[in-house]
Picture (cartoon, helix red, strand yellow):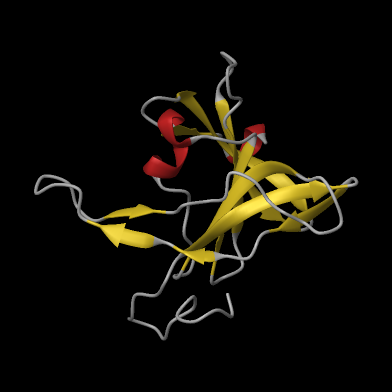
Length: 149
């Protein structure tokens, strides 16, 4: 969140960043963040953000494995967008999103499985299930009641 415009002054729209999380010898690392591009795909759709995450990571220490992608939102208390949960956008075993209030959410899409995707939020050093994505094509989230967590 220290990158240019990642956490702009109140009332201003900032820059979103993305990258991948990879493993090397059992430890996890994040690639350097790249700025998201904003483009208008058609007159019908609103602005569309796209990030080109690397298909591979070259680490001079040796062979790596990409496990997830991540991106930031330049505003406080931001949840994963419906587009972030679309089946067509899932490439890895999980997805992480961070915002300027240090809220971290994770989506596990369970690629190639019939079970629903799961959305978690990081609270007090643990992951708390907050929703399930029953229809992975649409990405619509079904909230998990607090008493069921």
